[in-house]
Length: 141
Image (cartoon, rainbow, N blue to C red):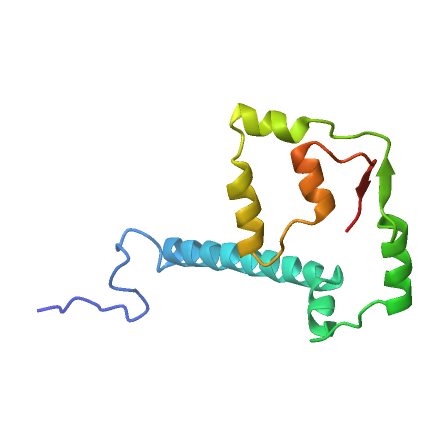
């Protein structure tokens, strides 16, 4: 009796009608080619990120960056906020009493809130609240 010939080169999962592994090998090669392109694309993207300075700047950052010179900061603050403030040629007139009458706020509660905060209203601020302040408005820090 003749025994069937066994071909050791054939993979058991590949049907015998196809040449020894040609279809499976092609699929495997295509998968590796796709993976290779993805790996290359990711690597190129990463290198562009490093080349743009993102990675280099991240490596060169200091824990404590140097503050700007104090005199320069003081000069810039003085330009924006003069020590004497800004004088505006208007007055509140009787705006404070009108707001109290309209029920916008309660005068005594308003004064009490500032006292409890440790910043009581000055005489000028109370005069503005009562509508008796004769001066111009000065905006300062």
